[in-house]
Length: 283
Image 1 (cartoon, rainbow, N blue to C red):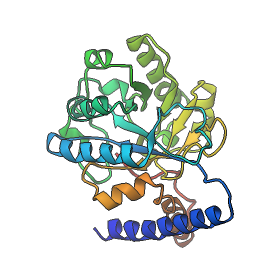
Image 2 (image 1 turned 30 degrees about the horizontal axis):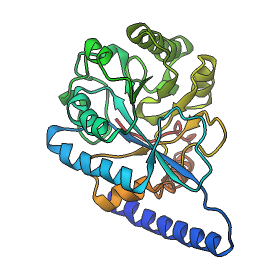
Image 3 (image 1 turned 90 degrees about the horizontal axis):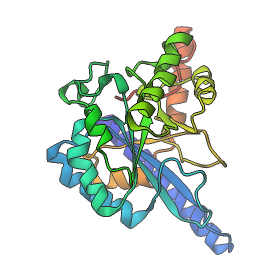
Image 4 (image 1 turned 120 degrees about the vertical axis):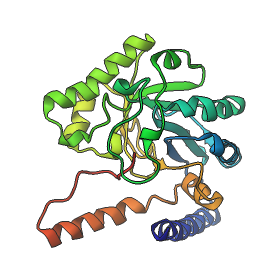
């Protein structure tokens, strides 16, 4: 709870600074800057469906939803958002997708290919244990309405990618994509990193595999450069407080990676060890 409150307070300050800067730009006659945030969900339980629906109402009221494979956001001063879901859990089909469909909000599902139809058994770091859920089946995946959904890879088995050797890394990055393309008979061009962990070797391997964009768990603003390849995402939950969710939607949590980076460096100095792989621990 303390960590959550610290994150909230820091983000309130960032949001205040953003408003001040926007006011100054307006006074100077400068155009407003467009921003984009990619939100990352995991599970939406039946009891959370109403709260998720309210969050999607906030999305429509406060921003403009776009697909996660958008090349560049329009430079019209708008606030844009892309919705994503990791792990491919069955409860997303039951509780999230109907709310998205009725609001015509596009979304991306990142699938762990070797867990389809099973219960996740990978290690998790806090939060709800994914082992209590079930991943969608191959048939459920094929039956999804692709008019507003994109499908991406979340690896084959959900490992910490920087810890793998080159052969294992290829199976997770390339093998998972090949399986998805075979199942769906269409191109898969997006990937999100399990746990949010990555390093330069992982990024290079994804480029070599011809992915168009890869997603981290760093809550930074998205699509800030033309044809951005490595894109940050903000972790969200249906149980987020309303103010918490709106601050995430506004990109006000983007200060956290700098705080985590400083913490890693300080711990590394104290322990005489190099910093951990880039990313944030998340299921």
